[in-house]
Image (cartoon, rainbow over all chains, first blue to last red):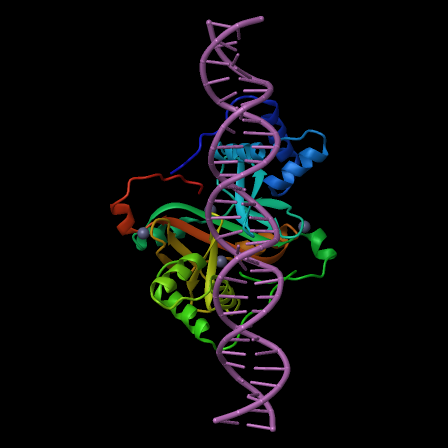
Length: 141
Length: 141
DNA sequence: GACTTATTGTGAATGATTCTCAGCCTCATC
DNA sequence: GATGAGGCTGAGAATCATTCACAATAAGTC
Ligand SMILES: [Zn+2]
Ligand SMILES: [Zn+2]
Ligand SMILES: [Zn+2]
Ligand SMILES: [Zn+2]
């Protein structure tokens, strides 16, 4: 449980990372954000980017998904429970309100499980990206 | 697109990995399987374990989930679409038949997306593991 | 302004997964 | 049953994302 303590002070880097995340639409990785900040002339150390993205996630101000062995972050105002419809090509994302999730709890207790969390991510290609492209399209459903 | 070609020949290592995976209950990583085989006196190279797990997945004979930046595999006979209820502590897993997934397609087209795949994993602790333990229990829902 | 301490950034460390490639083994063929 | 071509193996190097360590720096406090 080496759960590291979250950063909390109001620093320049903190707001920089926070705003950069809000400006992005769709999910981005810490690395991408780091490079972007560098290119924009407001560089922030890679570790610091990681630190703040992680802190924002802890605070519920961002949500994250794990794809292709990489962690993607996205600003997230709503405190409500929701899932994402993510474009595999450009990273654009839409929030989804799932309907019933009751069957889920039912299934859990039915099997003697105590629920901790669940994760639902839907991948596809947005209208724009369907237009161009012509590459691969595996289906791991 | 550096999609590597899958192994297909009938070799000793192939069946060894395949059977080891079937013997395990719950999800396991390539590393765990590799170590287990080594301990059991039927060592198989790490690369080879990775190759076969990946091949089995392509063939639909195994399914995989990504947790904590690590890939977990599990033998999977049923060709049907399904999801998993996974114990975060011991890795035990139960297959779930989700009810309606229609809203999902609806939501996709509604947003101009072409669906490719979706991923639903439910995490919790099984009866056994709820009994002991007393550690952390975050809820990223 | 001086002080206490959290935060930063660089570079090294980690860990999982993939790649490389020479030698080995399968399998179709004879 | 022997042969040959090409697929399979495995040890170690190479990648890649992420985490760590720690000395230098800047926030918040009085
Ligand atoms: Zn949900
Ligand atoms: Zn797109
Ligand atoms: Zn489903
Ligand atoms: Zn368990």
